[in-house]
Length: 195
Image (cartoon, rainbow, N blue to C red; front, top):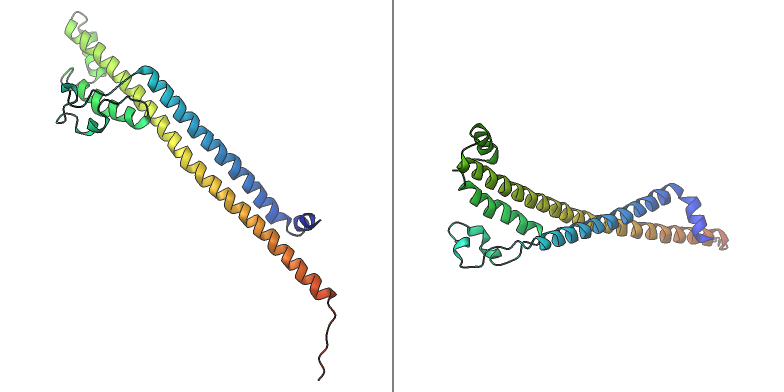
């Protein structure tokens, strides 16, 4: 009965608060699920590819040429930040040395003009494969970033839902106290003071 009285007395605030609570709870939960899904997919897909950074101290991971990759030495590429580092700092560096810094589109155009030039054809083939792998790894990094954003927005939404729930509970308690005070004032006998 108390809850029904509260609902009929302040219906607009209760409806708005309840809808907001539900939206934030469902939205926050879905965002956290999306984060988990993105992380699991990124990790499982990258792990299946078995891409690894060269071991520390190897000539393939020279500290002068790859200073930003030393912290990943010998590790598997199994998450978004590692995929970005491998794409931008390892593959990109190697691709620059294939055709004097030219891109696939530049070399491919030249190779189409001279189809008998085996060196240009090999460079175009290598650049195509390297830039494709680099693009795929950067795409994985993008999805991992979307997953990370979903995580923090989901946490914020759930905190917001908790705040709305607390506000609804406080509103209910304050409303009940107000009703009790009103009832006490009406039912208590008036004492008149003698003058």
